[in-house]
Amino acid sequence: MRFPGRRKHKHYFPVHARDPLFLFAGLAAPSAKTHVVGVDQTLVDIDARVPDALLARYGLAKGASLVIPNEQATALYDELLRDQLISYEFAGGTVGNTLHNYSTLADDTSILLGVMSAEIRLGTSGYRYLSNTSSRVNLDHLQPVDGPIGRCFALVTPDGERTFAISEGLMNALRPESVPPAIFDGASSLVISAYLMRGKESDPMPDATRRAVALAKERGVPVVLTLGTRFVIAERPEFWRAFIAEHVNVVAMNEEEAEALTGEADPLLACARALDFTDMVLCTAGPTGLYLAGHTDDAVKRETRYPLLPGAIPEFNRYEFSRPMLRASCANPTKVFAHIGPYHGGPDRITSTNGAGDAALAALLHDMSANRFHRSSVPNSAKHVRAFLTYSSMSQVCRYANRVSFEVLAQSSPRLTRGLPEREDGLDEEAYWAR
Image 1: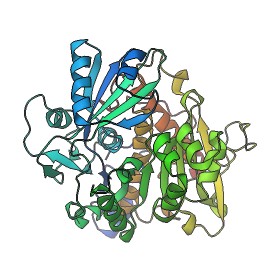
Image 2 (image 1 turned 60 degrees about the horizontal axis):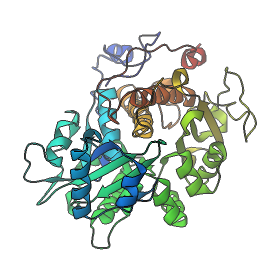
Image 3 (image 1 turned 45 degrees about the horizontal axis):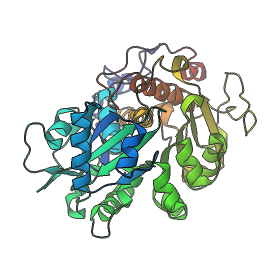
Image 4 (image 1 turned 180 degrees about the horizontal axis):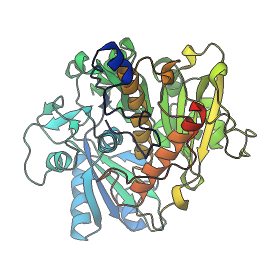
């Protein structure tokens, strides 16, 4: 798997040749493989620029995420098509976007669990989903269904507000028995979204999600939860806090979802509060940039060489050169934080913010996978004196996630069409600490 950025030391990562330690022992370096598993509602994103009157005509609350009947979705789609309001149609789903971006960045395998129409015709939602998904995303485990997958309308009004109207189709029909245990062997993470636990009582998707989480936990695979929208979390915040505390290791959210979950409007305070019931938090905060928060053991925390930042927690980035760990793995856990402003101030023109958070999460997953890959390849490396969650420091992960998010903001699709160009590393704190 590729690792992001230009590195100053050939031994840093990746290891293209046999490791010298194995050469002395007369052994070949072991082959190491890893992948990311995700469970998602398979759907197609339909992005359209619409007047406010259209939302009123279809009874859609501005800024909300609403489920609409198939008949209403068909009428809405026909009107958007007739009036040429559609900007694009692409494969969507928050976890599907994340896995696609991960596989594009890492040039590595991910496995998607969900449903797919057994009969696929040219131009249908199933066709668009398959044609817009990276070939490195393994779709072999999708459960066939007799009917359509979902459609998600992202309706952008002139003020820039996004309103989501979702036509379910059969996207919530994934059964627990369609989640095979073997795919979690060697996985670096399991990615789920809050949408999966929301639906009709007859939908099997929540039970399938719980089975995936249980299988991941049995094998020590970190569970990553992306929160979706603030409306989903605000419906039952107590449930989500309890669910995260019991099952989730990493939470990805934006500032609105963070407030719905924790009650804290300040993103930094929300991250600190979320660390009370999870191990690591990624929070995107629009023009403010993004935050990464986690735990590390007091004995291995590393102080930054960047300027200390003011905030609701004074000098909160003091230990941003640290690498995060599971709180249970820390003898003396310490909360650590990192922050970065938008890359180059953000794109000159933003067509849509849809998918920016998914892109940032894909970068974090890549770094977590790189850590597992390197630990399997070079187990005696000083990089693995503790059971860290990421390969890089929190500061470096922030910079990588920020760069990937910029690429998505600069285009109209939530899915990357290529990997990142070679980037400037600037201060390499890993090289500094290796001296």
